[in-house]
Image (tube, rainbow, N blue to C red):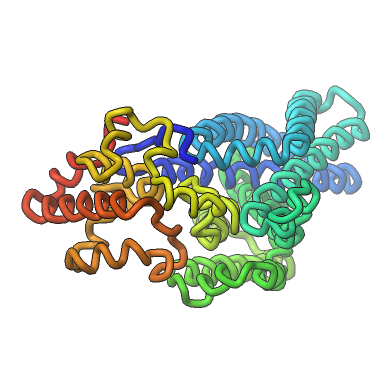
Length: 447
């Protein structure tokens, strides 16, 4: 069941560490994919029209891709694998074993992407234009194929489809939200690349006002697909499980607000790009380009937050709960207890399975600490402070019914009572001693 040790990060928690690294990685990865198409399309246009200004800018832009995309992308990519493997070990193992050959294909495309990207940057004016453009298109295609494969794996976690019954990898990969996920991510990639290009153009000292305007107007074409964000989001929403739809339409106010913000902000940026930059051919300064890029990045992160949030209470929908428990294991754990099914619990703790002093702490670490960090992010104590002891016990037994985005609390009656006792002591202690006590009383802080 819980065959791996738990990982407690003070104040933040493992989930927030993953979120912080993943946020940077998603933005960098989206830029890297979109930049490939901007370079390939832009070079073709520049050579056809003999636009030396645009060609010189693309040379500079390829250097930005190399420094920002390859360096930060590689570092944060490794960081994601490290953090998810210790914070959500069981889910990571399931994804690796289920999609082993898809991961292999993704790594091949990633290798092609890196080689083509470096070759593209280092061969400016050293190979014929047709060869150089071919390198650009090779990079763009390989980068998009990486996005294509990763989208299938990530969307599987929310909508595994018939995989829960068949265990067929193709049912897993070709899941209901896979096509709209690819569509949404592709639009986002193109927009972020176009906005970064506008920012780089404004920062460039080699471009005059006319040159910057020319580059900005060209880059704006990559923002125009944002007008498709609304129909693509509607397509995505239609394929969601009912509980996920309920969370977006009012079950969780944060989910609803982030979803609406992502759609509205993206659509408005797309409309501004089309009417202001493409049709009116206006110039935007450094501050405006930075503002537009910030809005697009926040909108992208908002949609990623929704994608993660509506999956609750699961990591793999209808199969693996966010606390690492497989749905089919609930009956067994309720019968045998949590501690006998947690190999990393100490022998002394196992001897306390009837409700010893450390049982409640272990129960908290195994079932609650993935989302709730005492004295830190999503602290549990303020949430239970208004409750009486009787209400605390009652709510813990029915927490998955009261809050559908939370997994059910499992364990024997004695173990549940021990967890209730521990939470009650923490609540009482935080009232007397304040924030310091809550931090010192973090269960399992040394594990």
